[in-house]
Length: 136
Image 1: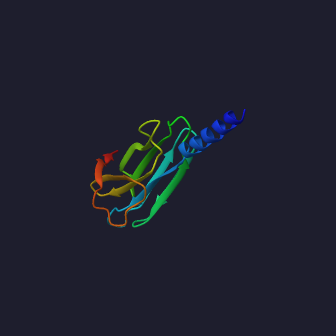
Image 2: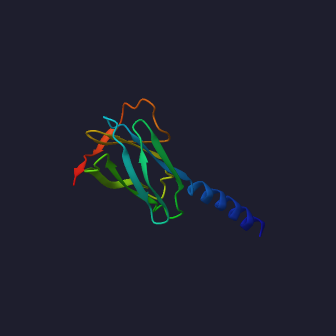
Image 3: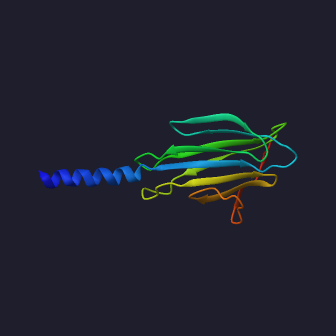
């Protein structure tokens, strides 16, 4: 019985480690004083809509689920007319062993850039352009 209790304790610690926190960082790096409109959602959570002024950001923190199926979808729109937009998967785990991280998104004039890491970068050099803007 004692061995079983030890097993349950160790198993619980492993599960708590797996159900860890993650997040999405979305920054407005648009020009010409454009506002960035955002709305994000998962199966269980909703964020926004919210407007982000130029040079500002939002951080959405959440816990990944036990089954490693956590996914967040986001819609970004460029103000003031909101003709340019993009709908995309802003966070997705790559498998059961993925414990999550912070996905750093940057909205720029020519598209939306990503840095997947543990924290945002104040002077990013390794951002990758992932999406172009769509037009209504």
